[in-house]
Length: 77
Image 1 (cartoon, rainbow, N blue to C red):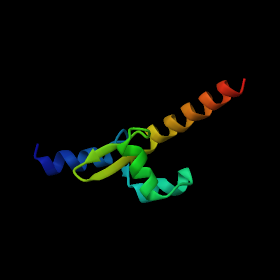
Image 2 (spheres, helix red, strand yellow):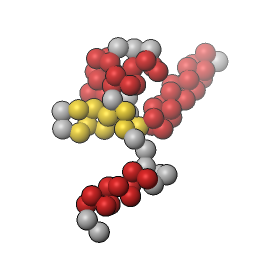
Image 3 (cartoon, one colour):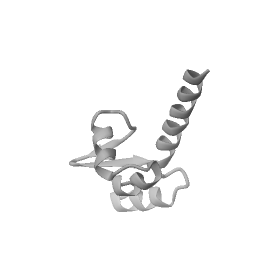
Image 4 (cartoon, rainbow, N blue to C red):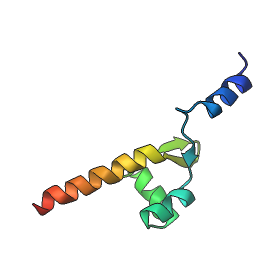
């Protein structure tokens, strides 16, 4: 199977999750895209570095937000 065919198959596979850019992530978190990159660089936000670019999986960010909410709730108790 050629690389192009494997990639095309992965793109149609339901387990394949598209990667998001900092500009796509920032509005959902209510912060500036540069802050998203800074947090990724500092490993405060789950991210994947691809060359010079940072990319994010929505499922990782959802889990991260849930963790942040849980830790906030626990510290309030």
